[in-house]
Image (cartoon, rainbow, N blue to C red; front, side):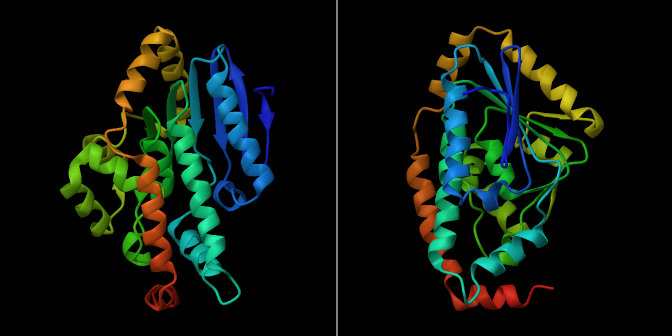
Length: 257
């Protein structure tokens, strides 16, 4: 498979020993399409196995899905003509995406900017290094939906900020600014938003100069399964599907402006 790709879910190109993957706005909705999903995962596995690639740089979509979009999306999925299987398919696809990114056998750098939903922060937390623009705002619509965030967020957050701070974050209903995210340890670097793309490539270049075997061995030990991410994601599915099926959830969506 060629590493330079233009696809419905993402675009990608190779610069020296760096694979740059740019996700598109329709990523989550399109993950239920088996052909599109498998193409994305095949590409990620190809990059992971390619000995000519040392660093994977993932860029968030510049076209953002906002809290209102997510609430409307859940409204569609839990409507009278929908089936709980549709939601389960999306959750399982997100599980597969998180596990695939987390399991890439390279240094994975993530860069994003603007209004970023918790799901896409969770994708970022599955990576090894995170860069954001100074205008980034992380949004947790957990209170509006009455749902825990999908994508392993609680799994990753408890490792970074502890269980008490994680609970406080989920129940606060507040957005997180770029500076707050840096202070909390959710991201590793904040730079001016207008130079995010160039700065992210430079960070990737800097990492690419390090010994590959050192990066690989360190990553294996850092990701040593002290906890079971796959099992956590399955349990996350169970809790979310139980909530989404409830009448309380339907009523909560109906009350949203």
